Length: 286
Image (cartoon, rainbow, N blue to C red; front, top):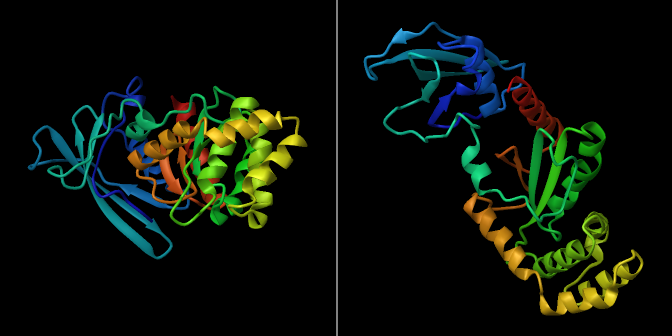
């Protein structure tokens, strides 16, 4: 189990029907923030007046799963809408009226990026990926097959380039090529994405461009236009912008996913599906 050290939380999203502290609302909110699955048990004590924070009550939350347990103390405002976890003198403040992950959502830009899935999907997954990254290749079937099969009308996936140039010598050039292909035909980008991971081990810095051009000619793209775009690095500034955005969001490796702004590293499908379900539940309540 993982708990963020200090959080300022609020349940204002549900305040239309409740105007005071509510245990069920607190539990639902904490499960969303911390990705606690149903098997994790939560026992919430009754509130007690706080001597440390006038106007707030103290609420102890006991978290347990199998043989592991953890106790957390929360300070809750009189109206039940504002919650402080841990030491109130050292907190991270969120604009909770919108989302626990609003700071990340404010930095994420999904316009003019490769994507699939409904534009109005209640869950958006943004992947920062590297086309030379073996871990990204391993995760690609989840992104490209399992998600659209399991949630065809509820999840949108957005790809953003994050080439790790220090360890992957052709990753930046592949990202540039991908942007050229995206601008020539947005949907063909995803065929390129699939092909890159399928042939990843057979690509070298010396052969990348010709292999991409050969592939493009077989997939209905204008190879001459693509060659010129790759030679001039026409859209490299867009790759640079994605890298800068990733750094601002604390991305340090690939793949890194943001599920409705909730940052996680590469994960197995059961974990990712649990998070998707949590966000769908939160969207349903809103």
